[in-house]
Image 1 (cartoon, rainbow, N blue to C red):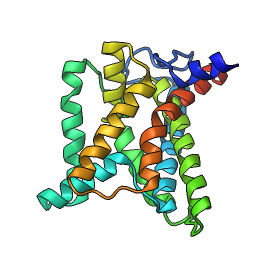
Image 2 (image 1 turned 45 degrees about the vertical axis):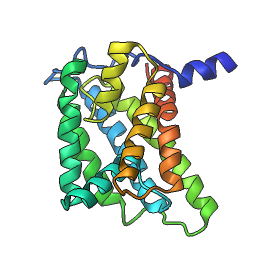
Image 3 (image 1 turned 90 degrees about the vertical axis):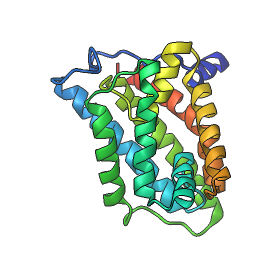
Image 4 (image 1 turned 30 degrees about the horizontal axis):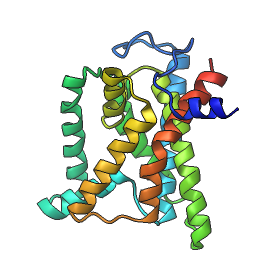
Length: 221
């Protein structure tokens, strides 16, 4: 049992399922592939929104966007775009390939956040806020499992994780942990605001994504 848990939390490969695309550049994927992709991105967006409405800290990447906004005077929207472009530039040495999901990631998640923000819970009790963040991290992990297993390309930031994984063979959880802690450290140094939810996200998201990939590979093969 312990070995299975460790394996689930330290995956080193994205599962290839019957509904996975044969390659990232596929412009005519199967309908079921697109449906799982969209489902995963919706879950991802809902998880991100739950982090926001919990109100005890934003994601590490948002801290970086926030810090850059304070330093440069640009809006958070602009700094988010700039960080996305910089992340994509790192794809070239990592030999990470984009796909239609790379575009859908940015569009659909933003839409889901905007639409769900008024309706998701905004607890005032700290324990409920804490529970909501933990639940959100799990939702994002499962959503990541679906959309990454579709094999139609990762989002700009997830592409750093998958690209490093392909080049080094390190587990997704370890790579994501280092990336998130580095990002939140830089964002905090630049003046971004860090909360307990930010720390939980930075430490837990890598393990959650690994678990999500494991569960999707096990139950949706």
